[in-house]
Structure formats: C-alpha cells, structure tokens
Image (cartoon, rainbow, N blue to C red; front, side):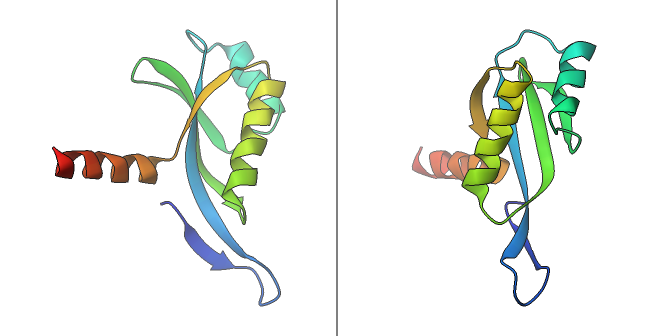
Length: 104
C-alpha cells in the first residue's frame, strides 16, 4: 500500500494514499490520549499496541508529498502531548526484511 496513485484532475498533482506508523513513547494509551489525538486530526487513524509499543496507524492519508505528510502527523502528535520516537512505513520495513534475509 506504499503509494496507490490517483489523479484528481489533469491539472493536479497525483494524490497517493499512504500508510505509515508513528511509534509513541508512552506505556499505555488512555481515553484521554485517544481524545487528544482525535482533536488534533487523527480521525483517520488507529491507536494500537504492537510489539509492546503504542503506535498510531495512519493507513489511508491522502498525500502528494510523503515527507510533509509524515512531518505534519508528527507535529500533530506532539500537539496532543505525545512523544514520537520512530516513524515506520510498512512497505519499506518489508523491503528491509527481505534484503536482510537475502544477505544472511
């Protein structure tokens, strides 16, 4: 799902649906944390625990510029009082795993 491309009009930049994860530096998520994240714009996301860490899964955000989209999401999380310790892009993580397996 790294970049499903669709064009809104012939005059527009291609818009891609992007999936990425923000790994948070908190022990557990609470209703207050979920509410704060929703208030700053994470209404398109899921707050989950994965591999012992709390993360925000953003799985369907429109973007024409991945860098700006991810940086904006990090800023939104910080506005909600969260500390983001890592950003993961699942498609890149899969490629890295394949490369590591091939070189072993």
